[in-house]
Length: 468
Image (spheres, rainbow, N blue to C red):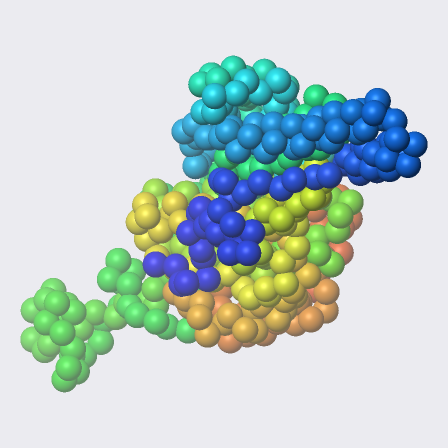
């Protein structure tokens, strides 16, 4: 089971108490026209009093009445409208689509002449390469009669894995003269998890149940009863099932079986997500490719009932949202959009570790963690391996997925091989020259290397290890 480093898939944070309830919070925005109107009314009233003009006094009173009426109507319209997000899936896969629907209800006795409804989406998800494609409009201008309900809907097509904040919905209304506007949160945000794609992998030796070929252990954990090495005279303490009865009958003395040390079963996937070794020029293609490989390997191991785990220096998007939350204190429409948007930074730096285990629940939790994984500038890969080595399972293969390998990382990986670990490095780069340059020091230190060029070569990544 994973440790507490992996947060639940949908952590929601309540707004700060000083801002009130998010579903009922309203902010009035006094536009420059309102102050100009009040100043004009005061000036006309003063001139009328000085000149003794009844007409000017009447105009000033009427102007003040219009300003007060507009203020009352704007407050009533804003307080009389609510929004509710209709049911939306919490998890999708790459390529799937979902319908986002927001029901807007005018429960007051007054008609609302105009209401601007906008459902916010993360800016990073809409910029090329697009993560969430839209069909329809998430911005609508509505006219609502008393008691009327209208639904604003649009389609979301998931093109990339990730963890996205859908919403909240911002409702904007105001008076007909443009003197005052009010904003409020109509529907709270929904957090959508898009799981990475699972690619069937070729080259798994299912008969021997070993991932990426067989690996002989230099450090014996336990005997493998399926791999008989020889026989020896029986010793006190040998279990009865270890007795070689054929040799005993032939020699007249008890003999015990000798087994080879068990080979590696399963894998611990180590993903490097540091910004320095995952440059922006290759993003988001390379990190998505690494995550897809990790998810596909975990799925293959799950189907073979082998243990699998995960360790990464990346950040968890759900953890970032849970700690920073979303705010409701805004004064302008631009402030509402920026403050209610998904947070892009996280200052919590800690590795994500899911110890090796089996079963469908463990696979789903690990797949969700991979979907939420993002680059960070926290621990380097070398620091991650040094810190996490005591918590990793020595009975599994370490499959390290990386783009670049500096001297510190190469040194740590070679030292792990020297201490008896079985290490395979998957170098995630397109150019053969870059692969050769990165793989050279690792091969010299006894680390097996594989080349992951693109998505087309991903299904054959395990076959490279078997053919060797």
